[in-house]
Image (tube, rainbow over all chains, first blue to last red; front, side, top):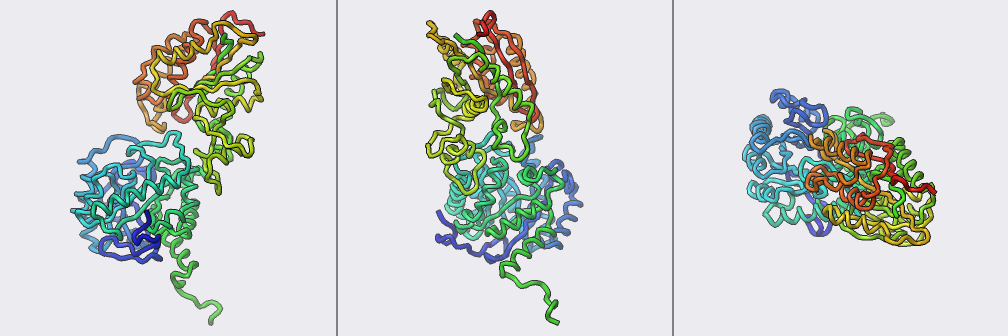
Length: 297
Length: 251
C-alpha cells in the first residue's frame, strides 16, 4: 500500500494546528518524564526541570515536544495510572505555556493516549508497533496524529533475543503500512499519519543499520518518515562508545537519514540536530543559507 | 554406540561474521573449538548435531547457517545468496539451518571435519519423554563397522540472568542453570530429564530439549565430564563441556 496520495509522493504533514511541507525537516525533542530512561536518567523527572527543558528545546528550534512516561527498556512496572500521572498534567502545563506547539505523547496505551489528547497532545507516538489496537481509535476520536512503527512483534519493554529476518526492511514496510491502513480505516486523517522503522526495537545493530541504509524504501511509500536514533545502541555498537559519547554518530545517522528523505527526527540534542537538518536542507537547495557576504563584498 | 558428547552454546555471537570488527568472547569461542576438537580426536564414524528449533526435524547434512537473517549484507537482500557465499558453496541455493544446528555445523567446519554428520532439530516444546526417546534412538542397537557416534549438543541456559540480559532478570534463573551445570559436571544426566519444561520456557532456557536428547542418548553410560566454560557475560547462560562415557575406549 502506498502513501497518503496513493502514488508514493510525500504530502504535507499536519500536526496539531501546524502544516509542514515535504521539504521541511522537523525536530521532535525528547522530554522524558521518567526516573530511569537510558540517556541521562532522571534529567527531567522533576516537573520544574522538565518545563525548563521544554523552554530550552523550543528556543533551540524544536518543532515537536515528545513527552513520555515509560522507559523503553525492561524495569519496574509503570501501570496506566502512573503513566498518566507522569505525563498528562505535564502535557497540560506545556499546552498552557505554548498554545501552538506540537505536542506528542510517547505511549503505546490507548488509555494514556486518550487522557493525553484531552490535555492537549496532538500526536500519539507509539514505538511498539501498534501493540494496543485501540490507540488508532483514540487518534481518530481527537483528530490527532499517530506514528505507525515496527517493533518486530515484541511486547512493550522487551529486548530483542536473537531476532532474525529474511528481509528486515520488507518486514518494517509490511508492519508500518498495515498500521497506517488501520489508522486510516479507524478515521485518522491521512495527513496526520507517520511511519517509523523504530531503530533497535526488535532489531539488532545490523538490522538498524540496514533500515537506515534503505530508508529510501520507506520514504518511497509516500508516508512521512520519522526516525528515532538519538544515542541508541546501534550507534554505540557501530563506534564502540558509551551512551554519553554518541552525539557525533547520531548526527551522522541523522544527516544520512535526512538526505534519504526522512522528515521528523526524534532527538535529545536539539540544537545540534537542528543545525544538521538546516545544513542538509541548504545543501539540497530547499532553503537558502542564512547570510552570504563572503566573496560578494 | 555414543562414544562422546560435547555441549556448546548457540548464541549468534559465536559466528565470526556477526560481531563486527571485534572478536567477541574469544574465550568462549576457544572453549567451543576445544570441545569440538576433543570430539573429533578419535575419528568418530558420525557426528550428530542436536539443537533446539521451532520443530523436531532432521535437516540436510549439507545445510549451513545463513547469517544474513541476523546481519543483512549491504546490497544483497537474497538470504540464499548470502548463505551461499558464507558457506563457500557458490551458486548453490542452500536452505538456512535453524540457529542451533547452523552454529553446530559451523563449529564442525571450523574444526575441519569432513566426515559424516546428521543435523537433528528438537522442537522447543517437545516434552522430556519425546526428547529422551529421540536420544535413545541415536544409539544403534547393533553397531555397524564404524558404529561410533559422537554428539554435538547445542543449547543455552536462561536468558534472564541479569538486569541487562535479553530477558531481563528472573531470580529463578541462577538456581535453574546451577542445576544444569551440576548435572552435566557430575554426569547425572537423568537430572536433565527432570528439568521443569514450563520453567525452562519461562526462563528462556532454549537448550532444555537438546539436553534431554543428550540424557536419552547417554544417560545410561554414567559419563565423566569436563566443563570448559560456564558463564553469562551478556545475561545468557553459556555452558561448554565434554562428556566421555565411563569405560569407553578412546581409540
